[in-house]
Length: 220
Image (cartoon, rainbow, N blue to C red; front, side, top):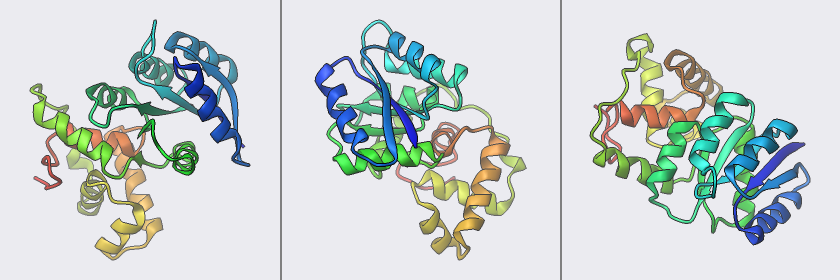
């Protein structure tokens, strides 16, 4: 059973997401929070698998709450929800350690699927929305990206990293590189370990920040 907490300053939104998630046979909502500070306390008490977090909340916003949760409770994955599909605050939340991003108008089935994927440690980049967000912000940021130990990657691991940064799934990467999905998963795990990234979302962000991938999807 995947245990979830929901954080949003609008009671009706919390109630709606809670009802959707509780309707799934393998998901249960163990608490709700109206702001980031309350969320941090709730996660400390409940130790959920996933925290569904709004970006804009009073007292402590979703970005800082995400940063604290990742530091204090790394086993709890953060799924960020926002009203805007090109919200720079969401990009900052991903940099803070969020494992996924969706719009608040997401269909019910997609929300449940997203929680399952994030809880399983999989990548949850809304197919085009988050990629557009990363590319948009990458073109406007001026500070240099962090140095990644790319020399530690094998040629195949680098190919897989580039494919992940383009938003491809394991099945799509396997088909493109003519390898099995378990092989792709193994290469992704090695890239995560070598580059010190928490999950696939962080691999994508790191690749864009380091300039490994050009906005638009091309590699350098």
